[in-house]
Each structure stands twice: as C-alpha cells, then as structure tokens.
Length: 107
Image (cartoon, rainbow, N blue to C red; front, side):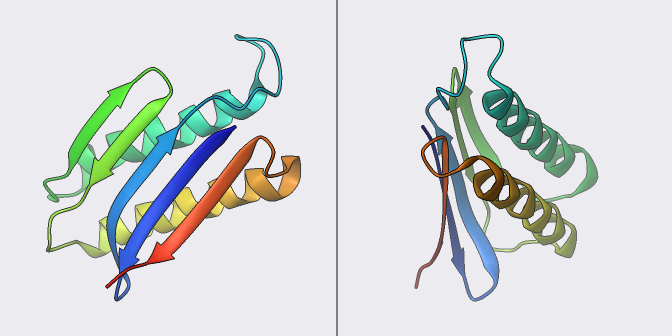
C-alpha cells in the first residue's frame, strides 16, 4: 500500500510524504504506482519551476518527503490542492488497500 500523509496548519501546507508501493499489479504494470508517481513528480517539478517557494525534497524508490518553508505562495497551495485532489480521487476509485491518503490539520 502507498501511504500518503499531508500536514497542514491554518490552510498552509507544512509537509507531504508518500511511501510504499501499491501492490495492485506486478512491478512495471502497477497503474496505481504509476499514477501516484506521475502526480507527485509533476507536483514537485512544478513547485520548483513555477513558484519561488524554497521547498526541501527527499526522494528515493517509493519515497517522497517534501517540506515547505514558513511562507508559502498561493501557487504552491494551488499545486498542492491539485495533488491532494488527484490522490484522493485515485484512493476513492481503487480503494484504500492500495492507496491511503491522510490529510491532517496540525497546530
């Protein structure tokens, strides 16, 4: 299962973490892993290319950890809202046994 944890505070994104593999199909044929990877990589690339936010990203096989600075642009929030929308849509379509998205409000 892919576990995604998104932390927010007062409408601002704090962090995003994705880890694991969906296990929907064999490696190379897993459409859920491919979809999650495409969404997350595209979002990270878009945050770096289209915003001035100085994000911190750690990535390796099946793992992405993204941290936001205290100040966040409207563009970064929109990109993250889009990512969360896409991921929750996949979870609703295929089930939480393959992808679990947890959006938490923290203080």
